[in-house]
Length: 126
Image (cartoon, rainbow, N blue to C red; front, side):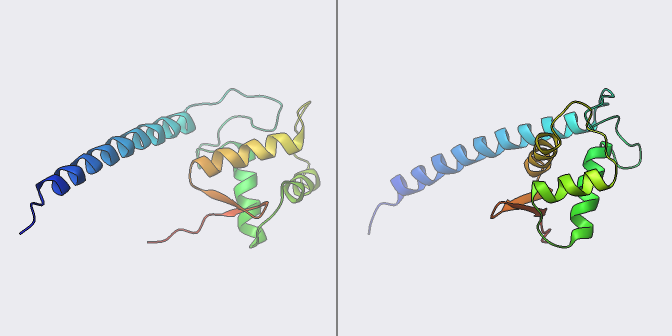
């Protein structure tokens, strides 16, 4: 009969490393949630103050609403056109850049995903 002790010890070490990695991820996600929930300083770059009902900035609400209503993946250019049509004020900032980073922030939060150069709401599986 083969001694499985070394294999089990190796597996325990792997589990410990994985647990440490997950702990780091959890800390990062908690830090992102904390930042997301903090009051944002009003600015003229399309972000503005957080809306009390959603906890999102007006820009984030606009992006999420537009993605939900589109019912398809959209490009940053599509969002830029929609923002322009809605009269969204980006001040002196580049609308494409502001929208891109808003999407990246939502992607890092696990809300949207980028597939084939287009953005969409991430499907929630239960």
